Length: 244
Image (tube, rainbow, N blue to C red):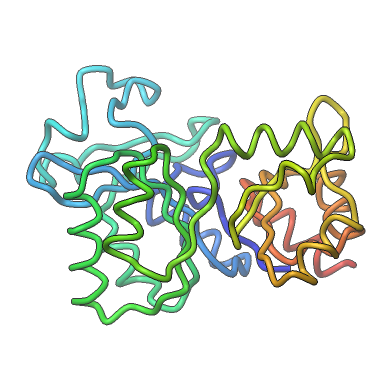
């Protein structure tokens, strides 16, 4: 099973920091998922939110600060045990040029996609990259700047598909994409089935299970033959993969 570390691991370490990705790599994560924002000087910063209020710094906003000031900001892990500096996307890509990536593009500005294309061209980066966007405009920018790259359906379409899948109507409401994703469970109910995953694979579609953070989640993915997952617990999932 391909294992993508969600923000490095937002349940254990200081998310989207080099330390988090280093730890995920130590556990054998196949790829990394990270969030892309833009600083005031148009550097691509790894941050789930523009405002850093949930890290106890409500006065700091990524889009209003230059890279130099952002890189000295420290964020804590959920348990407060670790405190690490924020980083740019360049830092991560230079450290791990061979990982697969999922880029969660938090803004819908053409500048983000233009800067990203320039960065990847400069680094002569590979094309094993998937995109997650949050607006129709952002999807258009992916098509414009990264033709041929795969991207997930927007969240509303995925939620509709998830609900339909519970009712056994997944094929009817399946998004018209080659890259799809669903959680293993919602409110204790299984979302996808082995038959559904086999159908997707027979039609050469790529499926990603998310967020796979427990024994129960992993066992369901394993039973259904899911080949890729997104997790906040790469340590646990890779341990379970080895055991199975």
